[in-house]
Image (cartoon, rainbow, N blue to C red):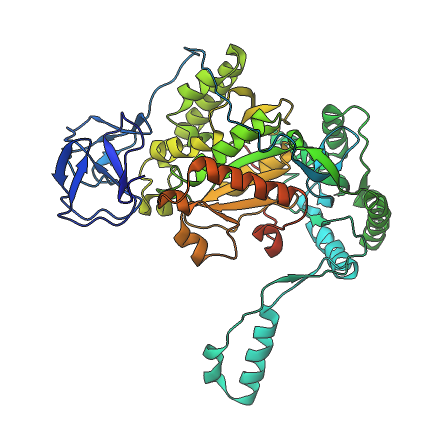
Length: 548
């Protein structure tokens, strides 16, 4: 890889700056030479030919924008001179072949997971305490306060000592010393766990279950059923008020749809039946404790890598994400698929412009038609609400080189590797088929990771170029940096760095194999992710209204 700039695809008419380039620098590429007409910061793109107004901008070999004005060779592309434009899509037009990567290195490797009665294997062993309606959030928090410290799962807050020091300085009149205080202690989780085979109790709260539409409440029950069914969960305690739209009967139906004669312990308690909050909470705590005794009987055992179900996510993306981190994750996806496992690519607003490629990768026409329908319906809903996929890039994305949704999408889709698409899942549907699956979710990080856990992911790979702390209550989220500068600046949230690809020190294939080794260690409980260490338990159900 050239250490200064990169042409990703032979069809592209823009180059990516791999380092800060200065006005006046001479660029030599494919026998052509020109001078940069302005500074080009690292991660941004610049034209490698003269491009007339209204003409397409190509990156990754696809249309990612169109020019508003004349662009000269060496001119940076920005939101001022380029507008969003993307390839159209339609029916499946070709059958694509797939050359699976070599899996010789991983064929005999295993991970140590929790084997469930239905054949799924968890990478963790959690007990869930969840409300069916927001009215029960406070009771969930009371139960949380009662359990965590006593069972050894409470995390020590280092910032309490900071407040104590400031209080002492204030009381002694030394206010000027407050600015000099430094907190060096990291968050520490209790290690004296009463139940040694349980990774934790997870308490989910939300603002749904009543009000809004009946469809939102039913979808919430679908999502919660997916969380309970997830292989990383041993059982659940569910609090219901009694009169809300999200009724226990709906949750039970959703669980039965996932598995006939659902076998995991699920305790549902209704406040309007139990009586006082004291009675409700006491009963919930007793049933949960007895459930924990049973859950603790599970022990980690060897499992083939085919039992991994990996979610593929990005957030806080930058101009390097589609060059380093996302292709690395894509190579991991291809390895897992070749090994017989499951992967899922989500965030449909960030597949804009690459739909036809994914449609052609679908294994049959029905799956292709489902994807096409979901994409069209999603985009129509966005336009109807006065928005659109073109409004997807965040200010942070744009600042770091992702100036159109199509540029962002073309890079984001690299997380899905090159394998065939075996299934397309609507929001709330659960993974069934081995191979690469597409899951309809928003591009919002937490709404998407929340959905992937509800659809059965037991590990989530999360690429980022800007840095984000996003985690999930029940699924380890491995944070993958697109660049070394981020990994060094925010080591408390980054687990794995693909920056060496940008500098040419390592290849995508090498980094992918290293990442899969790290995944195995996390899946076996040998390493905690940074998000787990920080207790970053993000959970936001999608209400299926507009969310990009």
